[in-house]
Amino acid sequence: MTNWVYIATSLDGFIATAEGGIDWLFSVPNPTQSDYGYGEFMTQIDALVMGRNTFETILGFDEWPYDKPVFVLSHSLKTLPDRAQGKAEVMAGDVVQIERQLHQRGYLNLYIDGGKVIQDFLRCDRIDHLILSRIPIILGNGIPLFRTADQSLPFQHVSTEIYHNALVKSHYKRDRS
Image 1 (cartoon, rainbow, N blue to C red):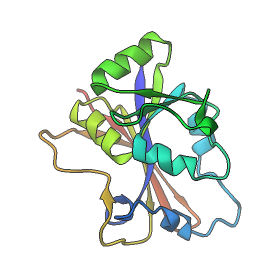
Image 2 (cartoon, rainbow, N blue to C red):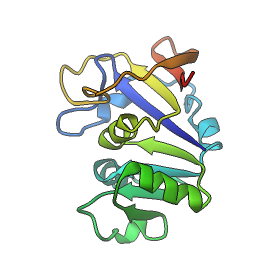
Image 3 (cartoon, rainbow, N blue to C red):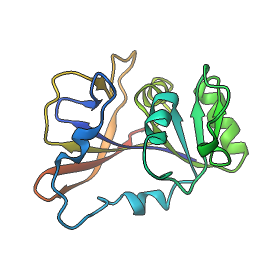
Image 4 (cartoon, one colour):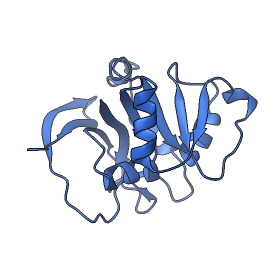
């Protein structure tokens, strides 16, 4: 049972602009059209857990990007749009309880996505791996990946890869020793 974060940030630690924009993610040239290891990462994942804001961003894409079940954590969203029917499910509650329910349903390797949801899982010390891709841009403000925490959570560096001499992807594993 493993919870993963795979996310991109600006150099100053933001995952989106203050308005929720993510166009800056595409500022890195990608001459080989690499997916930066995302496809391989997704082969390890059983399901995705994301917040409502991230889900609404995904709904704006031309095509539904996932072939895995998606669980949207929201207290306000009650029904899904037609486009997401059969592809996503709304859940509400404590992240530890939600994690337990998903594990009981056979979803053991979870991809945790979205700023608030990632922060909630970190607050409960439920993240096992962080894969952070840093895009070489300073946004100045926006939605931060990390917020003030009540505790320190040590991680061990696993690996770092540099793509196109611009994007830096680092993998960290939670140090529970």
